[in-house]
Amino acid sequence: MTEALALARRWVVDYFNRQDSAAARAFCAPDYTLCIGDVVLAGRDDAWLPAVEVQMRNFPGMGMTVHQTLAGDDWAAVWFSEHGASKGKAAVWSGVGIYRSDGAVLTGCVAQEDYFTRRRQLKSGVCDPVDRPAPAPWDTEKLPSNPEAETTVLGWLNESWPLPGDIPCDDDHITGVPLEFEVTGAEVGALHSSGDHVAFNLRQRGHYLRGLPEVADGPTEETLDVNGLVRVVDGRVVSGRVIRDRMGLWSRLRAAA
Image (tube, rainbow, N blue to C red):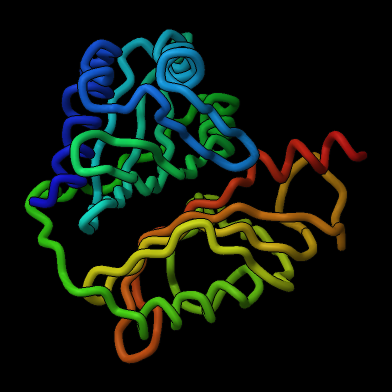
């Protein structure tokens, strides 16, 4: 296990699933920064921990299930689901986080969580199932980087949504209503590979077309923040999980209406 993955394990097991802020202070740097869509929580004690504590108060029994991890020397990627109940209504929402380490502590994370699907479940009162947990998420080995796989993923992400292939994105596979977004360009925030798996964070530019409730169809010039953890075989993205900041997109479209 790399040091970064070991620290990510402590983040999940010691901090999040125990809801123990004191534990987080032992392995997260004082200037730990979380970037999630348009939101930047800079500072462990003044910004990040207080924000998560609000969520933990709203979901008192909230926990996290890990579905897949990737390991690098100074980074670790985690596909996870958070789940819990608020005011008697349960929900499960997935995310992909890419953690950074200086070798001793975690220094930050760039993540996406599907808050939009959480909103849908709390509104309907019907909870989605939790995806299958990884049998041994903390035993993932660090493999050599794969520039060809990274190039394939970047090409794939420069196509428009819905993308070709059967890769679960947000809750499209549950609702049957895909987000349609014309991509004209992208800015990479993080891109890491380990063997044939690639973890990424990027901001796509383009035009919202349709797929979100309570907002008018486009085309509307917008951006879309995307995280994912996917596998590449023979030059094609064949499996994985993608989470997009639909909540941020929806909020901006609503505000502009």
